[in-house]
Image (cartoon, rainbow, N blue to C red):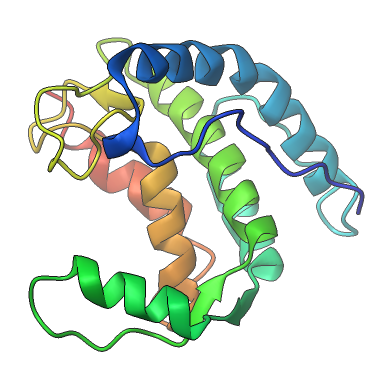
Length: 189
């Protein structure tokens, strides 16, 4: 499979980015979305057994996509420096896994999150994009999120990254993307 990883022209340290740069990030995200879904499509369709997958916006497409993504998820060892930085940011002592998702996996997660957003928007026209900028401590500060859910904003990229971590910890399986869509669809306001 030839896959060109996403390379946002931003730091992605959202809480540290000036608001003007965050605005440019949101614009870039919207412009990059169709191209990234195209790259994702080529990657999926070039994998034996997944040639027929279509990014048609139908929820059923998430099942096969999720099964494919599970076969692509990879981890690498975390450096001591990474572990120390995470420890500094946590208020309470927690066990920090010694593995991290690879850049390749994170790139796929971002592309899949972009596609997942399109499935939501196609099937729930009341949803719209927003960029929370009120509180830098908000988990999705500065990131593109879908709004009009009863539980609050939905960050599709973060959800797919979380799904990937769940697969690594063996708590999630290939049906996870469909599950995310199904559960959050019930929460559309």
